[in-house]
Length: 201
Image (cartoon, rainbow, N blue to C red; front, side, top):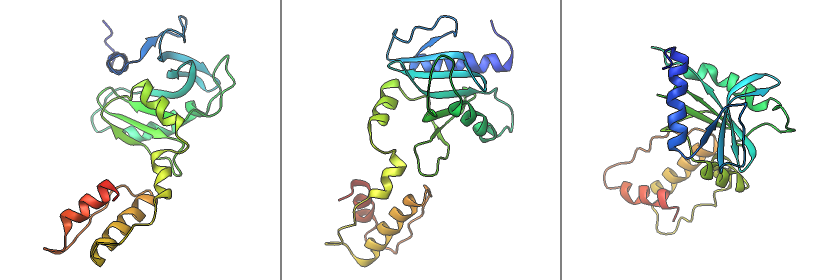
């Protein structure tokens, strides 16, 4: 059994990838046709071996930078390293920069989508399924990029304070500020406001 903290993290990551529908392969036994999603360990790049390179339907789409879990360790400090591997040239392939980069300890996992207007990592529960990443890539824009295309809010049936709250919330999302607080007085229609901005109608 592997005992080092780094290998324990990779063992956990292997299990999580498999639970999410990925086939995990060693770099000397690669078969990209074995399944929809293949995660190759220690794939060679011109920046050195990446901990994992993710392939969907035979095409490289992302990397995983595996790190051991340490008390008080800031995972975001490794995001530049993950981006370096995503931008690296993969051996045997003529690839552009890969759109997705994960950094994970097995306990905490963060993803960056480089198609975003201002790419920034976010924490996720686990690795996405290969089909999910494939579907994301079929869309013309990432979720954060598509927020810039929100249509003008139809104000019919809304109070001025409700229109202002929803408009400001949408502007916050467009400016890549995912956390926002809406403060409204009692009786001003907070529930209806919430339903409106969630459903978009």
